[in-house]
Image 1: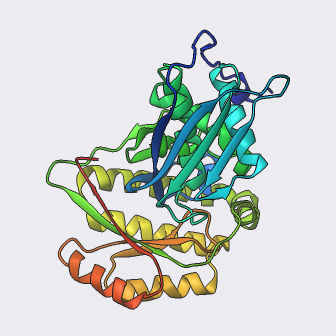
Image 2 (image 1 turned 90 degrees about the vertical axis):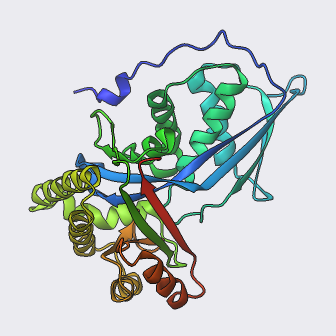
Length: 328
């Protein structure tokens, strides 16, 4: 049976021409609320955008040298980009159907790299935004997410598409592979306060996927996938209805399941326990696990007080507060 993803039809933009000398684009980070790992196996997942944590890409086209292939020079926070990153830019040109051209690119990011907040997805989306805008190509958010997910394969093999969907739409989403992406609406006057805490530990996404794989493909794998799916749908309903305690219950159970899947090491687990003791209603790992970030849901009646406690307790760790409300 042919993979349905391989049959995706892309629009033809090849008549577009380069129209601007330089351009800067940005893309926001993301955090998964419920559904890590299970989303790879078809379950729903819920994720939110991190509007204040952004990746910036400044692109300047340059003349190609006669007789030489187009050259892409990238700097990430002042350091020379790897050949893999250069190949991602060329692949983006191919996806957009534009003639490859030489360019200098410079990036800056307020996202902690490799922490499970979508840093590779932000790069893919920002690059596509720059290339398409520079050639007067109009991409829908769905096209942008689809193209970006193709580019993400350079980093994560076979990504679900969740990260690039959140980053492309810059909206909280309910996501499942090969299904329509649903935007999550927060009612006016409702808000949810989250806190992200950096463990200062980094782990390979691919290695965490391998560790979790038996949990989802073994004898009880289908039941594990189904439970994550139910929790994501419950979290979606809680966000839509403003039910903070319902969301907390879904997040906490999902966190326990990730512990069972083996992607929450002892030091991350200790941070989770400490954050709950400091007043957070729910705390879990977010992203692939093994390190990176934990995410907490703050009590709306005591969010300032509990946030301060968490900041004071986790000195030496990056602590980021995230608000989700109707304006996002």
